[in-house]
Image (cartoon, rainbow, N blue to C red):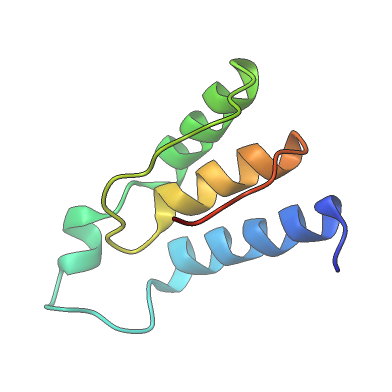
Length: 85
């Protein structure tokens, strides 16, 4: 099993790739730009969750996963166990 730092690095890479090239599949033209949270906003979300020492976060809706990746990065960086339900 990868270490937490390896998992954080993988998530950061996925976040950068998503911001740089977008998702593999789009529902419609311009969909990604309309619905995704910009990378700087995702950084702010991640930083807020770390500052607040969040242990539980509920993500409602997923769109293309930008905010979910930021949430996962924050939780794993703090040593929290991520879980999908």
